[in-house]
Length: 570
Image (cartoon, rainbow, N blue to C red):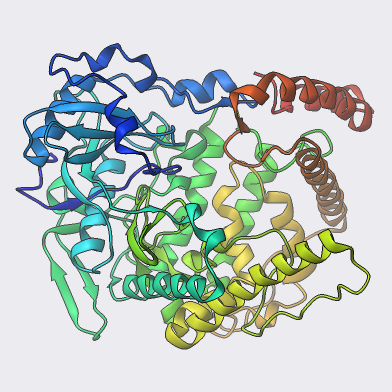
């Protein structure tokens, strides 16, 4: 059972998106009267989803993000946690994908952030309990700038709030996204180095298992955690234990309700096998398979049989794909969502990182899965490889606008090259993991993680057209005795694989083109849009559906697939 931090000092994350926006004190103080008898429960906006509307399956998406609890009690506990008499104002941050967060101001001016997970956040108890323990370890052992938790509960059935909650200190910082565009090149490079230093700290603790981190007392069979520190010494810490994974692939798309092996796992082979078994179990047990966010249904018709067939192939091949470099298989705490809203910086010195937030759903997985360019450096354009400075584009025939865009893109690519160069020198294991991500072998290891939704046709095509040709070069070819290629593919199967691959490409291309025409990010967050754009975009999507039926539904079966699989109908 979770207790307040006089008993165990723990950390907490804030909202997955839009955490801790900069707010003026006057506006916060004007939000509610300074009245100790204020009934916070009368404000329905606290409990409802108000950030925007969903063009995909809105009724379900909104319901998942509505949560009812006793805000009066949460405010009382928050005041007690920070040593104040009472809370005088509560202001809700913009809704996150998996949480609601509130800024609470006390009568003495102290501030805290209170966070309540929504129904889609993950498994009850485990998600919150792991989040707090992960942040405590990251703050106290790895010495990262993370908010300190003041009080929390992962047991709705025994607390007085009626929901899981985390109450944490408010970081004195602003989101990096608020200042990034104003920073000069030197300042941006300093931030890249600071984030790299944080990542280097994460690699200081190599755990002996894979799963997620908890306080020992929050697990039924917790028995302490073992890890190797930066000096190569074995460390045992009885405060923490590794337990079931709370990663998003263990909970999203209906997986939270399915029973399967969530870990922990003693070695990477067990972990990789469990991933495939998880997807197979969910595909077999779910009454209806979730829709793919990546491709329009119709050109390609996914089936349980095709997905299970791909998983059977994966069960035969996965062990050969694993890298032989042991450093790429290390189990570490890793924040994989370092976008510019989750990095808080000192407003007076924006190159100084004041806090890293959003530690929900962190899992301990092999480094080859975690390695990647931090999302705050993402851009639309050619991918940077290696560590060399990207070539300056030929702008001789461009107009002024095009030249400016080309220059901006070049700077974005240069920043990624600088990140890659920095880690190649300071964190060589991470750079080797980053290089491994560019291989067919990495793709074949990662693709099965989401076969419940999609990817099986790409996987089978890659096995048939790439892996078979380069089989002797797979990482563990010699480890397992240089065997013959273990997958037999008939001419008929090859024809079906090619047809399916072409159909998927057609469906993916259509959805990407639709995204370009509408400006919607249709491949994530279920098409969240602002309130003012909703009706306009829904009308456009109704028209697009008729175009899709005209272009892709040449038979009654195809028409049925498009009708039933069109993702933008409620």
